[in-house]
Length: 224
Ligand code: AMP
Image 1 (tube, protein in one colour):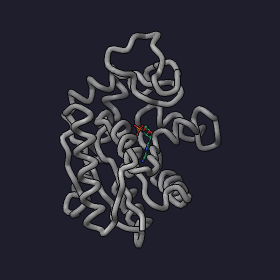
Image 2 (spheres, helix red, strand yellow):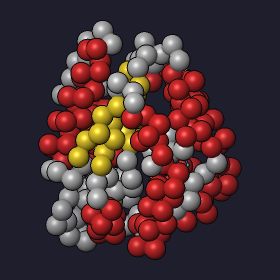
Image 3 (cartoon, protein in one colour):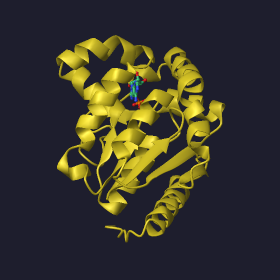
């Protein structure tokens, strides 16, 4: 049985950062579909060339493509005990496909990070990330500072331009927000206020995940 986690929420809610720390805390992989697509675009693979314009413009890649990518990724051995999904599902069709994939695998914890829209725009249009490993630059970092994790330089994400951010938020409200209604009735759905200090949000996410694991009869151990 595996313990699957979906971190759900609008762009800029902190899914990447929080998903990463949850995955690290419990020793399971974090799977970010946005990172997978950006890697494919950078490597100019067939997939990357097919999705580049969509990813840069803030639209959604087709359900068919995304479902195939995630199915293949979840079938790998490192995801057999558990995983944290960041950026998937983004549509009801993707959520239904994930339910099918999870059938017989164990409960799916859904952690919904709720953050007001203007705060999202502020975060996205001011954030810089490491060009090598994708880690967010710490608050107040200078232009020539280097990433504390890998030494890479910081840059803006191409789709963090304000017009594209607004488009991504529009896409979110149209296609992804309905997922909150899709999952809300589930016993393993948790809405968490994401507009708080990161360590407070991390503690709330960890506690919700642990509670679901215990309810499912699984002992999870924090690795750090
Ligand atoms: P993210 O890093 O999660 O904000 O994703 C960046 C971009 O990748 C999105 O704006 C979409 O164009 C694309 N993308 C990532 N995940 C998905 C998904 N599950 N379905 C469709 N498109 C996606």
